Image 1: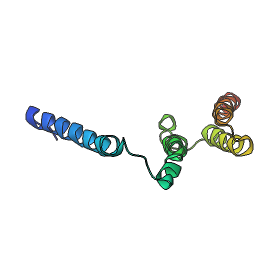
Image 2: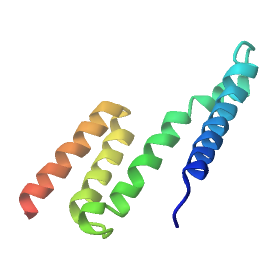
Image 3: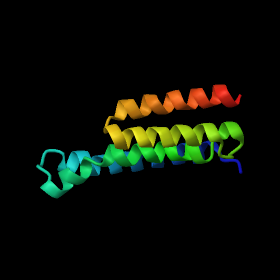
Length: 109
């Protein structure tokens, strides 16, 4: 489907306004107010929810293998999960997963 120049600019403008409205609704309208304790407690889990959401598709359906899971990525994810659960250290889990990925790729070929 092709769009005219006017339609493309209308889409860009609409998406820009939508993005601004979403951010302004949180930052502009309530940014200067103190959030209730339950909201502050829930916001602490944002990174914990975002990182697996970014990584899981790369492990389950990696583009490099045509969307098929492979042992190297599954092993790296399991290693990172185990290290994170055992040691409660994010950096150790990340670097341990990277190390496991490269080690398995080197061993398997």
